[in-house]
Amino acid sequence: MKKIKILIVAILSLGIGAFVGAQVNTIFSPPWQYVGVPATVSTMLNAVQPYHKIVMRVTQSSTSAPVDTTVEDNESTAHSLIRLGTGNYRLICNDAFNNNTLIFPGNTVADCDIRAWVIDADSIGIQTTDSSATVRDSKLLNTPFEIRLYPN
Image (cartoon, rainbow, N blue to C red):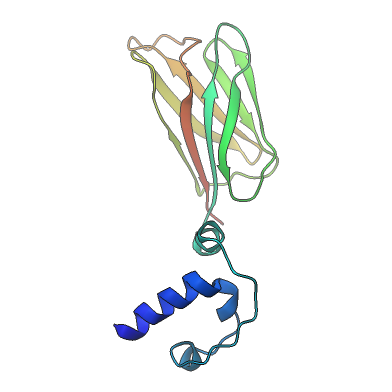
């Protein structure tokens, strides 16, 4: 257990780059050779995440197209949102989605259901309805979405 604690402290203070290419039997035995720049916690988390993540907040009102604020995107993916019709929207992101894409829409408005699904490699469909299943606009109000893109 002591060796694991030392490794964690070393990674946090030196950065993950210090251990790239290190042999397993030398990771736990000092001295380590420093081979990279100090990593931030965010950089280290991105290095170990098994998926690409897009987190955004989406707002839509009246008949306007939805507007998103990207909160996190660990690969800086270019994307856009369009309004197709009442309560129907599309997130466009070239060649990003596959059968291993998970979508987690949040809900910030009462009397609202949000459905989201992968249409093809370039787009995700989004639909907002009220509690009677009537398709409606103006149901996305700073609504969080997390999209996880796992490799095939």
